[in-house]
Image 1 (cartoon, rainbow, N blue to C red):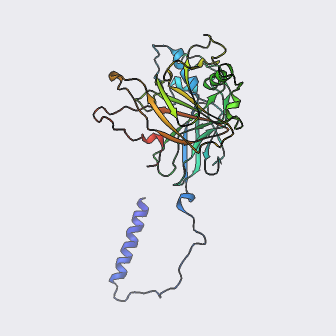
Image 2: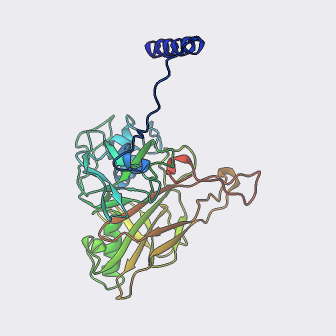
Image 3: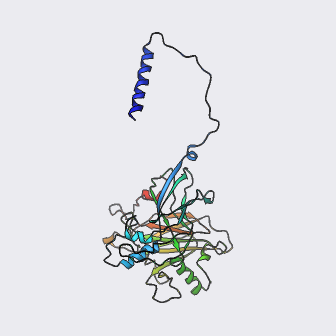
Length: 354
């Protein structure tokens, strides 16, 4: 840097000296005008580095429950914290999905031993955002970490994290990539459809476009620290299309086994919202064209001044995502008490366009 400054000073001094010369050397005028062979727009010539963590939210919750009421570990998603480490997905395949091309934007990268991944060159553009996509691979830790027992393994379905990433209009730093298992929330929905609705359904059926145009999991988390991942009890999602299911949880050995998944999740039909903050929205293929967009409304059914509830989250409009599980892990927000009715803008971590 000092060398460049000195060079600039030297050039400036030479220019000043030439201006003071009584007999300056004036070059002949040239008619040459340099022109580029091709014009490349700036937003296609640059790339953006995106990185983050890949994790299994069901495994995180099971470790939190297993840790008990006196758990010494904070329930935060952050590298180095035991509860997250027990839920980190190793050897997963992560890429950025391009909704314009309806295909991955870059080759997938592999997650490391703590679920970390880096996509070094995602195209930068001012138009449509990208979405993180897990290809349904990866495993959980098999060793004990800080005294926490390993979570039983589960296979995963391809999972699209429903958090838009605007690569030129955002303050993106690190992203989450959710992994939806075949033994938890989705298995509970499949069992409910089979036993209660009389529609034989497997977990794999939920990503079969011949049967379902879309299957989306919403898990709403407690307001507060941006990395806090505690279920927001008695919250729900309302959808403008599709079937809505509220999910509860209890230890997997409790009945009814015909309705409870291997990880303990179950569809509840006797509550106005989800005790776990989990809502699943299915859009069946009924032969009619699917809706282009689904409008989602986030609802908190609790009023409690001590915890500043009800919490809120802005409404969402999103296209359907066939052949993958859509997963929206949303952290609820506090309503400013001094401004009744005012809703704060989404936090920068959501990576929405400014």
